[in-house]
Length: 71
Image 1 (cartoon, rainbow, N blue to C red):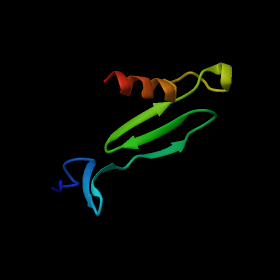
Image 2: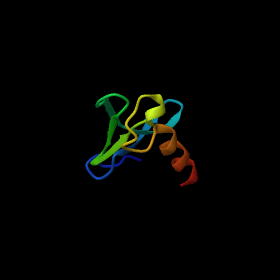
Image 3: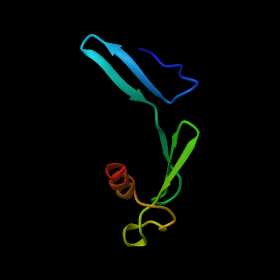
């Protein structure tokens, strides 16, 4: 059960234990508390509030996590 990597960022890999669901995400620091992740062709920015040294220009990482649980 394999998928063409050009059509989906997700992979299903066969392992000795069974199957593994995998995908690649690249992330890097921009400035101060701002970070940017790349998932396939999607850019995901995050930042922290000014209370902890950010500029509040994007949702904080925990907001993305909470939203992912809600989805």
